[in-house]
Image (cartoon, rainbow, N blue to C red; front, side, top):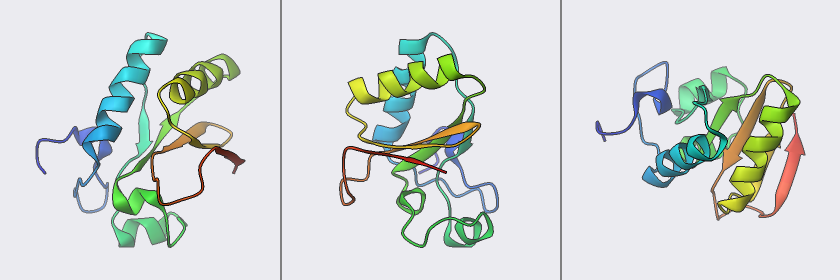
Length: 114
C-alpha cells in the first residue's frame, strides 16, 4: 500500500494501511475548510497503538480513523461541520485534536470527549 499519503503512516514501523476513503475524506475536509490539516495519528500498528494508550479495538488499527490537530474553537467547529456533512458519524474531541472515524462496525452518531 505504498501509494498512500505518508502523513497517515505508523510512526514506529512506517506501515500505512489507511483506508483510501479516509484519505479522500481528509482531502475533502481540507477543501471545505480552505486549509491543510496536520494528521497527528493515522494507521497504527498494534505495538504503536499500545504505546500511545489506544484502545485494543481502536479503529486506527484497521486504518479507519485519523486524528487531526485543531488549535482553536473555530477550526474545531469547521472540521466537525465538514465531517458531519460528509457522513462521518464518529467523532472524538480532545483538547488539541479531533478523532475522525469511519468504522461502520462500531456505534454510529456519537461524539465523545478525551
